[in-house]
Image: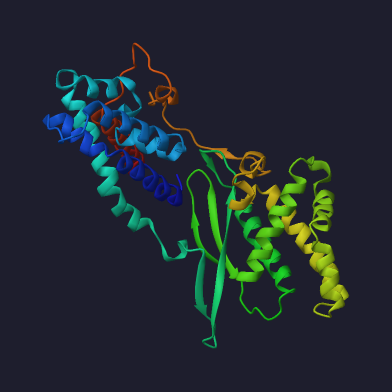
Length: 350
């Protein structure tokens, strides 16, 4: 799981627990206290409804965190039914485990989130050049589509960085007064490699827009004529017209104009063939880049020891069943994690 996804998952899960007032509800159930003027059943149903509403927006990362912290009982209708039935039906050990998990998400994980947060996580930064002039730079995040347990070929990383540098340099020719070189603010991994590239704001906007426009026009294209389709897409997106306009305004010469179009087309092709895509190419689109693009080199996958993974059953929030499958306890999950850590330490020591 990438660092950024951990931060987002912690925020989403914490917000869901807060909105449903899970810890307050568990405290009342464990102590038998009852707030004045509050219908107990109504309060439980409202909490269930609120948590369910947030859960429908969860991704795999949030669901994994629920498993790690022993919060999966919140997906079991039998758990909520026992809260409604009252003190005799409540498993106090289970309530305690869920309460501890909720406490860790609400109070402990935000501290870890602060450790993971970096200054370069901002989309915009202000830098000073060699002459002390302040300039604003903007971020474009590029990811590499990979399988969950794959090792990256170094040549893929080289191709992505080189292609982004060439693409940025070519687009900068249309803005000769920018004076800001491309820079890498951070690199992250976990499920997919990501690179935060920073450069002059207007150039990065052009770069991001061009990649999205080209992708939207080539996403259904066969690989046999990929380069040709990219060149056609650049023309349809208005990039070729823009090059000719810059040439007419004598911003660039004819030779540089021809070279810019060749380099831009080649760089985009290399990026796509390396499985590289931007967040905008992947978010809220009919065809998501991460599901189509993949590195063209053979991926190396590492194996892990098979174990009885806890399976999530999203349907538990939709329909009650007379015999709910018992959820794993937090202690079992933590013991399982400890076994994995012991195995890892033994392997590293060897």
